[in-house]
Amino acid sequence: MGQNDLMAWRVGPWNKGKGTGNRLDSQVNVPKTRRTYCKKCGKHQPHKVTQYKKGKDSLYAQGKRRYDRKQSGYGGQPKPIFRKKAKTTKKIVLRLECVEPNCRSKRMLAIKRCKHFELGGDKKRKVCAERDCG
Image (tube, rainbow, N blue to C red; front, side, top):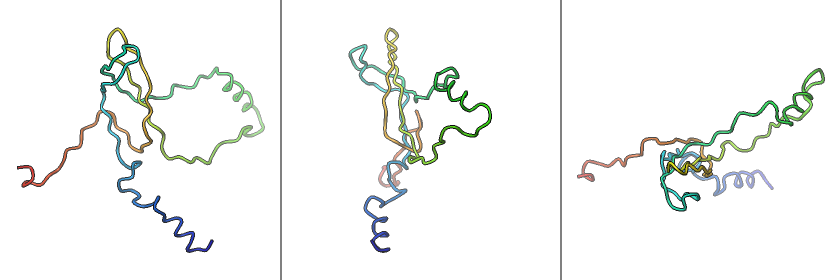
């Protein structure tokens, strides 16, 4: 494979248009409420939407206790530290909570990867020329 072949491979159809219209570059704006199906109620209900966050790691989990014991004292780093991260984004997970007072059931909904995520931001307005809006 020659130098020209490598260049042609790097600039393939999958690399076209980086930064313009690429789905990872666009800002994702999700409304704070959504009408969707609730399994507990058995019908579509309004749901409150929040972004899922990982809980704080417990200091008393077996793996953490074992790791801390292994780390203590002399002897350097006992376990490998991962340094070859492949992804630049995380998948966004929405936490949907039914607003029905007797239900309040919660479920998770994963959406696609994005670099910028916004919850309940301003909607984009269509900008038009004066003669078109008339």
